[in-house]
Image (cartoon, rainbow, N blue to C red; front, side, top):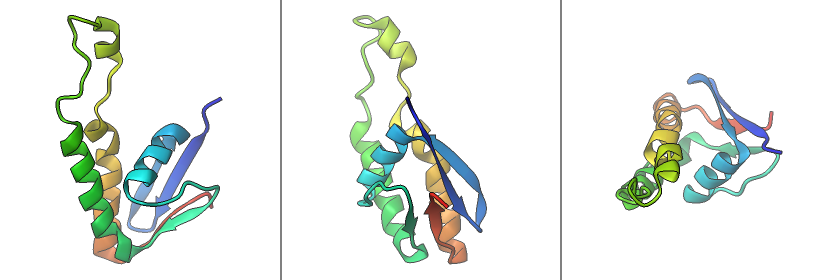
Length: 103
């Protein structure tokens, strides 16, 4: 059963993701998924760079609508899924605020 992970920072509102998406995002930025964790304000700039690189690398990987219309309709690009989190990282970095989960 999917679980939700909520990321919190004093710089902006909370973001909640399904654990599979949170695991993917944290792996991309080099963080280990755990019950609790932190992305420090100092780590946010590098996290943004890594997420944007992953989004760029995924470009064009969408399922072929002619070959598999159902998969194409269900596909949500990484860029769409991570944009709110990228915004959170940027705001947290600008305000010197850490991002926490599991608290």
